[in-house]
Image (cartoon, rainbow, N blue to C red; front, side):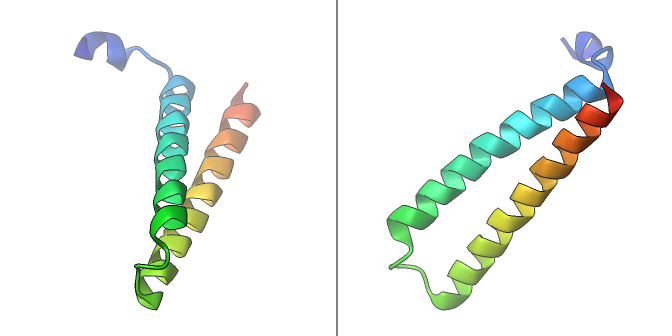
Length: 69
């Protein structure tokens, strides 16, 4: 399996990363929405910052994929 993965293009690997980030982002947003009242202000700020960084990372990766297509 490892050898097959080595032959996947960089764009395919980026697409996999984008899908994983989107899944993790969805899970993070659910966690924030369900438990934001139980988190301290600092923890909420960290979670919101992480969410925003993931949005940017996904956008940048998607732009790279489009540019190379």
